[in-house]
Length: 143
Image: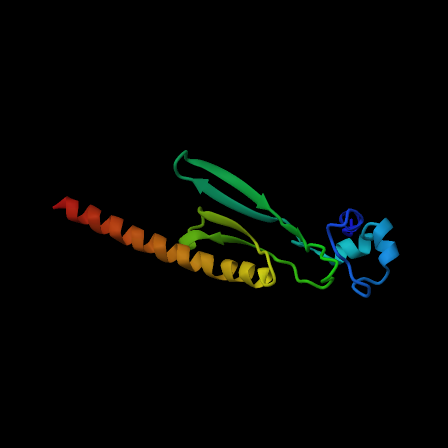
């Protein structure tokens, strides 16, 4: 709903003017239009075909996403604080990374976007360094 049950229990303090009709919110949940306005989703499912080299099997993967912006009676236009990613790790067609970043607080949306933007780069730098070190160790064992 619109936070009305929490308001009736006294756990949320709603000030006059924060919502269009305080009485309406106390009795009615969000309308379908209001819920749709708070929701973002993928237009279509995304299909990925990957090969599991450990078990030598082909895997068809499909994914989609949906995220609904939280309801804050004192901040009706607070941005969605969720971000997601699907990324091919190190450009490998058979290695997918899925991530969900759930921001919180006054700048949660910025935190989630920062994590989404920088996580893959940091992970790939660490993986790349580890791979170079492993290959170097392997080469030195050869002689």
